[in-house]
Amino acid sequence: MCKSLLTKINLKTAIVLLFFLGLKTIAQNQNESGKTAIPYDLKWSERMALTILNRYPQAWQLDGNEKPKWDYKMGFVLSGFEKLYQKTNNEKYLNYIKEYVDEMIDSTGNIKKYDIKEYNIDCLNPGKLLFNLYDITKDLRYFEIIGKLRTQLETQPRTASGGFWHKEIYPNQMWIDGLYMAEPFYTQFTVKYEKGKSLDDIAKQFELVQNHLVDQKTGLVYQAWDESKEIGWTDKQTGTSPTIWGRGIGWYMVALVETLDYFPKSHPKYKVLVGYLNQIAKNVNQYKSEFGLWYQVADKPEKFGNYVEPSASGMIIYALAKGVNKGYLGGSYKVKAKKSFDSFIKEFIKVDKKGEVNVLNVSSNIGLGGKPFRDGTNEYYLTSKPRDNGAIGLGAFLLAAIELNK
Image 1 (tube, rainbow, N blue to C red):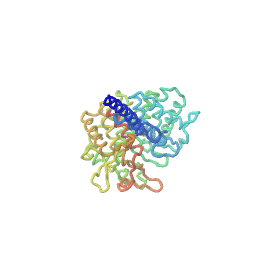
Image 2 (image 1 turned 180 degrees about the vertical axis):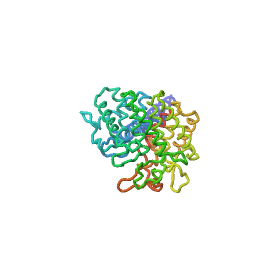
Image 3 (image 1 turned 120 degrees about the horizontal axis):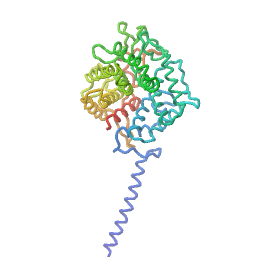
């Protein structure tokens, strides 16, 4: 009888202990703001997205911004949220996009602090988010802004041979990231609302890159080209900037795969664009590290101070995987993308005790010209201090993880 009573006491004690241990576990799974820690058994795409939601409750806070801003970086990251929403139908991903856009526009359908006269081609990138938002909500403000951004392209200054200037303050200059900022938006608009009337002009922007920004030796792309050859950073023979930047290659490859999303297969320039993608995919694979990652200065892996860089690597992985999934590239590139993604996890990803995903050592924002003058040399790119969790690194990883379904 004493033994039976002792057994009952021990059982009761065990139940109490398990109850309190359970409470402790729940408490440990709560972060400082009361949010549940991110489970380790989710796919990398959702872990990254949930991390962003935890860390930046408003999307304009990405990259440490202190005030709301209509910004290409937000557009880049939120394009990943849009794809994740389409994949999961989870409303919180759509709401995150909508809250950002609604914060940035007023009741009359104007973007706050947007000035068309700046002719900043970066401003078009967040506009891509409005197509789906309008289709879902039928909010006319979104439709009006789509039209206003298209109007900017109508009057955007161009180089003598027809390439869009990057900004009003950068005359006669095409920047490689400008292809990503403008062409997917431009293509979607002209196919959706203009019966494709501007498709030749879109193809021409890529043709100008092929003719003037592709390095003849490596087949990789420079960051910028000044057709007038007047700015201080330009090569007086070719007009290109001095450095082949890893992220610049990423911007170009993503521009191609996302433009092809909307470019009709029946158009004669469709195969030309697919050819450009195959060309850059082949060439960029000659310049990856032994573990399948890409460098800050892409064509000089051995240069002192050079390093593998996550935003470039993530973008290239995403573009290669998407290229295969869409049928633009051969299947071997998917195998390469998967291996590179695994290396990305080992090299750049750190998961903290809350389950939040950190992307390490992301290149800071890089530009050319301006004041103080940015000369675009290899040294300039290598001495620009990287930072953890830069928005472009987060977005690149999110997009790569979605496309690979990892």
